[in-house]
Image (tube, rainbow, N blue to C red; front, side):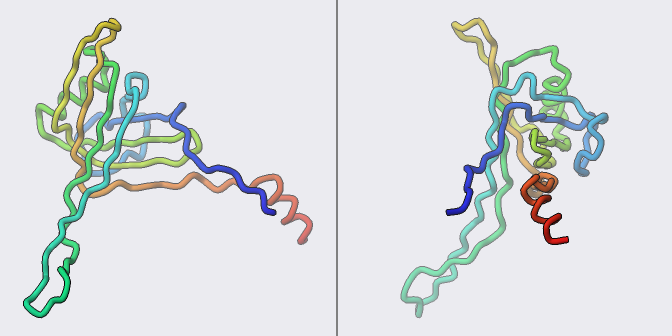
Length: 165
């Protein structure tokens, strides 16, 4: 029997960042960003759905399709709405100026997701729990770039390597 463990990515401790300036380049320096994670309660990232093109002919026995151009992906942040938060101000600015900004979701394990997007809508609402909440919806330009966590050898792997020497 092999040692197997469940695999997962933790969301607690994740950082969500927006670049301070409009750009079509991914974030490379966290110092040039504003954090969003202290107001984000959850997020949703939806990959683009590709268009299906019907290529059936009179001789087709079944419907035949091919993949067309994919639509743009989307991201939604649900937030505790804070009108004075610098990151949320920048999100509202992106909505107003229709410019694309770089975003980064940095996981605690070192893996990350980068994308370029503009805000297409946002909302905020009050409720009986005395917390103003809201959401921001982003339209992604291009695609998500997934960056794996750095590979750090386990003590078991190090011991096996030492035994082989």
